Figure 1 (cartoon, rainbow over the protein chains, first blue to last red):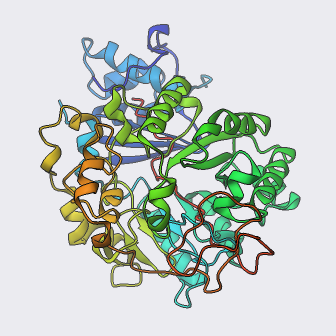
Figure 2 (figure 1 turned 180 degrees about the horizontal axis):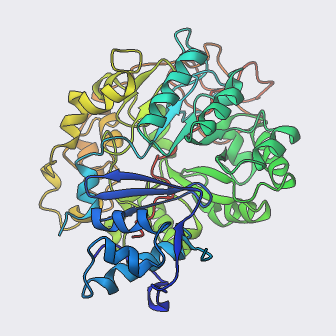
Length: 102
Length: 412
């Protein structure tokens, strides 16, 4: 589980089957435990608590869907709900945004 | 699967998340509680080229943003140039100011940038309370700057308040001022650092006021920022929003105007000096190799606090507050909510408390505002004349008392 603090938006569900991308004002800094994120627009700091989640997040922009980004990063079906929850938290704080399919 | 984040941070990061950078000791004000004892410019101040080199390093290290303060940073003639240089190099800027240079034109320019945030210092919701600490006219200057920012459409700039015994009763009024200008209120803790050491006894909130402050903050949640500076209050029960951790030398630090690197903005003393950015290897080398920082990143013992049930919440409180009140670093915070700090203070003669290492205070003795009833003691000179009179010179503003972790929210 990668979420330290329960986020309010988790229950709303996360659309794993659509494409996502990092917000253009987001800065990502890899760390031993995962990564630090800073959003220059909202001035919010956040973190990813595992390197695997960092791999997923970094590949969102090129993957056809979040589900595919998770699969490529080696996330198992059993782990998927935890990743969806983490991604939902990122979406609710605008760290990642829905991408229009191309 | 991994350590809790707070422990990860406790062991330090390869680079600070953000840091405080006091650009100058020069200041048009002479606030009685100035953390950096500012007033006069230091002739050894980093040059524009040296500041740029520091920014280049911060960019390489991916430091997200710097909290620029002073002194009054905007009195540096290259201030705007350095702000532009930082943002162009992906280092965000939050700067603290008393508002003296925030003209309508400057406000419009600031409102146009996503990468610059502004903090206006205000230590009273009325001119009377504010000016007793920050000097005559400083309330009007701050309010004028806020009006300019609001008129320019700068939403969500910060109004930064150091909570004192005299203004803790004005919390709702501060919030109303922030709401009026579309700004966000930020409350921070009074530290016995710099000239603050001289006034701490008279200005720091009483135990009852601390409880009142805590309840007020809990009720406001994330509407009000605190720079995570009140984590010692977590011992009352629920933690306040943010990271409840002393980040000194672990995730934050301070660069002072002459390039000295200290563990935190509240600890300008040789005991917390890690190195200088002018040295071989620059700032990165100080951050990564300093013995002082290595020591701070090793597991800390709780010392006298270890057996306290609240230790997991408050973690012994603020290192700088302990140091400058003469308390041992592994004991209770002087404002420990359990009262352990008060007991320790009464046993420790304050004459033995360490003095700040540097003093850039204006040499001429400022005169207090007419009819001021607030305390205006300083380290040198007599009390202000009772009849007030014009200000010959003003006390330095402590522009930035920002914990570099302000606004931090562990989300994902």
